[in-house]
Amino acid sequence: MQQSKPNAAKKSKGEVREKKLTARNADKHVLYQLSVQAPETDSKTYARWFKRYTGRDLRSMREDFCGTAVLSCNHVKNHKDNTAVGVDLDRPTLDWGIENNVKKLLNEEQQQRLQLLEKNVLDVTSPKVDCVLALNFSYGVFKTRAELGAYIKTVYKSLKPGGVFYMDALGGPDVMQEKTDITEKEGFDYHWEQRSYDPISHRFVCAIHFEFPDGSMMKNAFVYDWRLWTLAEMRELFEEAGFDDVHVLWEGTDRKTLEGNGVFRRKEVGDMDEAWISLVVGRRA
Ligand SMILES: C[S@@+](CC[C@H](N)C(=O)[O-])C[C@H]1O[C@@H](n2cnc3c(N)ncnc32)[C@H](O)[C@@H]1O
Image 1: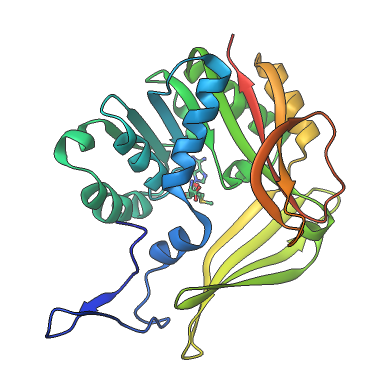
Image 2: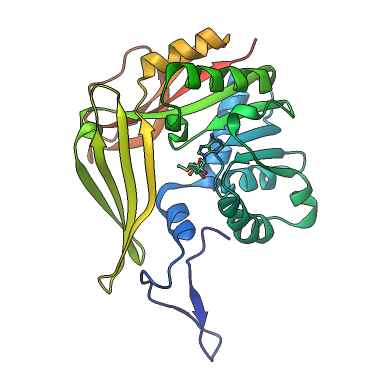
């Protein structure tokens, strides 16, 4: 299971002892999944929202920029009729996902309901699905309006009538600061570095590093060179692609911590938060 702790080593009496994580023995994909993904919950949340939007159960979904495809695996597990397509152009990442997620999370029958495509998301329009997800801001690789617009049109063509597209977004003045946020995880620290932000092009370079209790660091485990897209631009591109009912789901704020509370609501006007995460949603007519 991807949520189980990494590198658990068996002791002689059958008791499981945690091997201390270090930069040398840790696996960056395991740490990434533990740091930024909650696939069991998320796969159910997107399905619940889909039901609210369409009145139907979510059966076929596509995960664009799927990386290790852990969300797709969870969707397939959630119901015997669920199918998923994961699209990513990085072969080694897909292979890691097959070995560590697909083969460990899914039995043979479930594996038949998952298709992984080593492709550019710009080139995939079939099979047609009920829902497409573009998460963790990965579409930031598209640096021009023409490219992002072409991607959103490709998604539109990939959806069955009534299908739903979810695309997440981040922003706020904090995101435009050169800084590193450090979050303590079990056995390691997760570093999110905002390396540079160019106010003219909106080019946004960021990186993930991991730090371990012995002081060792896995630097630049992941480096992203993105454009920071605004919600206004994204909404316009959804509409230009033909999506209906285009709107933003905005995350509420926890009154005590003043951080996101995980509850997303449809809003026409956002809050002037220091940093925010939200989703743009559109439906194919
Ligand atoms: C930030 S990771 C996202 C992984 C996963 N979707 C998640 O939510 O955590 C970005 C992934 O997008 C993939 N990628 C980047 N450009 C792509 C493209 N044009 N088509 C398909 N995959 C792409 C990369 O190989 C990488 O695995």
